[in-house]
Image (cartoon, rainbow, N blue to C red; front, side, top):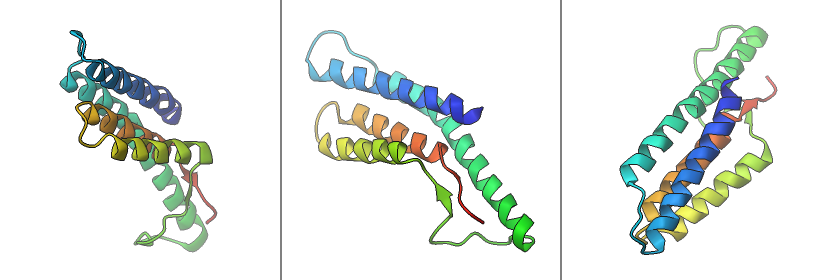
Length: 129
């Protein structure tokens, strides 16, 4: 359920951030406050973080049921699987963030990139134990 909420909240935050970037870039009189865009993005990050934590918890429970109690998580690789479409969106968000650096609307694009990366992480599922 939390992953479904994240699939709705993160794209909505990206839409608000892109609208803010567009309004800032067209030099019109109407602007979207960066504070408002950041608050909306922060609100969207909450279900994304909860979805990611749920995937990690499920993975640790899987490992515990197979090998006994788990005391540490392997530091280099956490066996989670993220669907390719979400990874692609996260990569495009990162590229857009880098491309917008130095522009007036760059912070809006940065917020959108963060929301896309969080969306990808929220859709992770446990890999094989």
